[in-house]
Structure formats: C-alpha cells, structure tokens
Amino acid sequence: MVNNISQNNINSRFFLPQSTVKSIAGGEKNVYLSSNPPQDSVEISQQNKKQKKGLVGWIIGASAATLVGVTAILSIVSPKLFSKNITKLKAYFEKQADKALSNSRTKKFYTKAKDVTDWTLRKFDFANTINNLKDIGYARLCKSKIFGGEKSFLVKTNRKITDFFNGIAKSTVYRTYHRTNSKYNHLIDAIKAHKSSFSPSDWAKIEKNITELQNSVNNGFSDIAIANRIREQKAIMEGLDEKVLSETKNLFARKNYSGRSIREGASHVDKNLRFFSQEIIAADKQRYGKSVEELKKVISNQDEKAPGKLQELLGRLEGKLPKDEYDLILKKANDAEKSMNKAMHNETEKYFDKHRDLSLGSAPTDIVTIVGSSVIAGAVIARAKDKDERISKTLTKGIPIIGTIGTSLLLSANMVAGSKAIVYSGIAGLAISKIGGLIDFARHKSYEKKLNKAQQKA
Image (cartoon, rainbow, N blue to C red; front, side, top):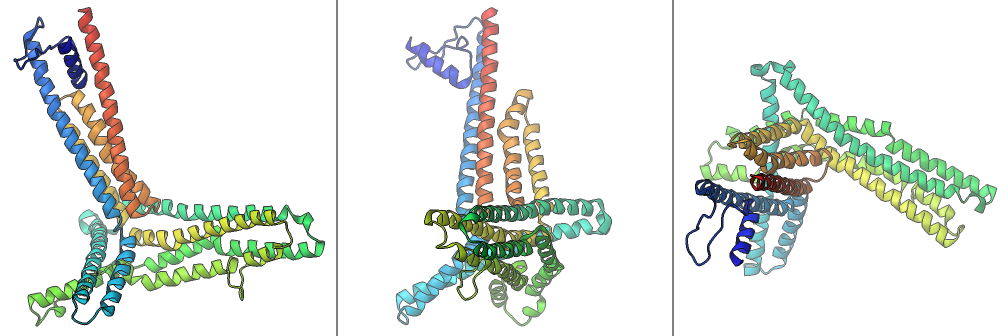
C-alpha cells in the first residue's frame, strides 16, 4: 500500500500512467510488473528526460526571477530619477566635506564619496548618449545608398513607425488635458448649482469670473493650443542628431589629445562624458516649461498679489456658501488643479523627453529589438524535436519573450517611466511564462488521462 501511494505521487508529478511502473521499496532496483517491460523502460527514460527538462525549466525560471530582481534594482537608477538622486547625494557629500576638518579622515571620506558619485553620474549619462548614437547610427544606415537613400523603403517604414509611437505618446498628453478640462467643467457646474444662493449683482460678478476661468483654460490647454506647443517642441528637436554627433566627434577629436599622454587623454574623456542630447536642449526645455507654467499661473496662482482666475472665483464663494458646500467645491477645485499639474508634467517632462528620443530614431530600433526577440523565440521553437515539444516551448518560452518586449514597448509608447517599464515588463514576462506553464501542464495531464483510458479499454 505504501509503495502504491509513493508511486502514485511519482506518477502524478511526472505525468506517467499509474499502471505503467511500480517500484519496490528497500533500495532494490525497479522491478517491472507490466506485461511489456521494454515499453516501460522507454517510458522511464522519457521520465528522466522530463526530469532534466524540469530542472532546466526551473533554472530558466530562477534566472528570469533574478533578472526581474536586478531590473527592479536598476529601476532605482533610471536616467531621470538616478540623475536627480545622485546629484543630491553628491551635493550632500560635498557639504559634509566642507564641514569636516582639513586633512581629517572624515573629510577624505566625503571627498572620495563625492568623486565616486560624480564619476558614476558621468558614466550613466554617457550610457544614454551611447543609446542615442545607436539610434542615430541605425537611421543613418537606413538612409545610406546601400538601402536606396532618403526615399528607401526602410526610411519610409522608420518614419511610419516613429509617427505611430509619437501618435500614441501625443494622445496621452491630449487625454490628460481632456481630463483636466472635464474636471474644470464639473467644478463650474457645481458652482452654477448654487446660483440661487446669491443676489443678482453678486452672481453677475461670479459669472464674469467663471467666463474668465473658462477662457484661460481654453487659451492654455485647448487642443489647438497643445498642438501649437507640440510643433514648438518639434522645432527644438530639429537637427538634434547632427548636434549629438558633433559633440561626440569633438570629445574624441585629435586636437584634444595632441601633446598629451594616454593617461591625460583618458582623463579628458572621462571628465567630459555627458548626456549630450539632454544637455544640448536643456535651456530650450527649461524655457518651454516656464512658458507652460505661466499659462497655469493665469488659471491658478496662490500669490495674493496676483491671484489666478480660480482663486478669484473661490474668493467670491468663500463665506457666502455653507461651509460643507464650499468645502465640496474647494475639493473639486483642488482635483482640477492636480489634474492640470499632471497634464503639464506629461507635456513638459515625459513627452518632451520622449519626443527627443523619437526625433533621434528610438522607435525603429525598438521595433528591431522586438523583431530580433521574435527571431530568437522562433529559433528556440524550431529546435523542438516534435510537435508536442514545439507547443511546450511556444507556451513557456516563445510567447513570454515576445510578451515581455511587447509590454516594454507599449509602456514606453505610453510614456510610462523607464524604471517602471522595466519592472512591469519583467513581471509581465514572468506572468505570461507562468500561465503558459500551467496551460502546458494541463495539456499534458489531459493527454495522460486520454492515454490511461485507452490503455484501460485495451
């Protein structure tokens, strides 16, 4: 009885029919009680192979889990977040070094720590430049005479891919502003519901404020206004690829190294590793952000000397309505302002940076990445020995590879922060792999049940 229970557990784990093999306890070799020992021997061999495949699967799964863990850690050092935090850390170390006594161990420690953070920041910034150069290089290759020049199929395809990704990113900007406009409309409707609480003269003043608020919102954040600002962004990005190449060539120009030793030349390169594309348009980005901020101040500004239209309107309502009613209106006003801040951040930060990368050719190389991943997945599946193994590899390896990259691209196109995109796409890949594994497991169990029934009938 003990042997049967033990064998049932083994069979259920490795998908073998319970009637196929029985094991004798006590360390003896397996005794085949089936009427067809050679077939059983084959099945045991298959069982061993499945055990090995299971081990490989666990290794792959553990590797994937490790990858997600590493990418989660790397997410902390995403370009924008990393640069911001490491700069703060560098300033802190510098401040502590200045406070410390001259030639003290503390001063030496903080000075060294500042140098390390500065070195790390430069390397990370230049990694972004390398990524830009990769995109620019691919775009230049597609425009070369080898592929037909400026009017080649590849160039046209790249342009369509870029327009597609840019369209998705732009729609996110428009969508968040539409949400903001909707919140302001709900706020105004809530205020108008209290018309009867005011005298005709007071309400006339409130209506004037409402009209001014609506006009300010429309002037700053209507579809036409947004489209005009996006065209301004496009003008800023014009010729950026040439400028990045020029900065890179200048970094490695021979004139910078003539008369210098190898150590001095290496030191020059190390001190000038920067995120060129970000640096080149930094002043334009700052100016652009300020212009959008000025539009916001017309709508909402807490400065008592120059209050925004929203504050003027709320000032006419405060003290004239019951406190609970006024608090509800104030809550709607705060919600509308938060939505506006988010929409502005999407436009001036997320989309601006996305627009920069797209103008350098990031979208086509992303597609090349997913195509390459699909080829890898296809190669893995093609190595399968039979139809059953092909299905298993498709479910557990092929689809997860494509799913991971596809998720990353989708998140990127929707301007989800790079750090989050890495983590989310990794989690998505693991989830798809797990689901595929469960489907594959259920498929094998179903097959084994059918096989058992067929053997019982025989």
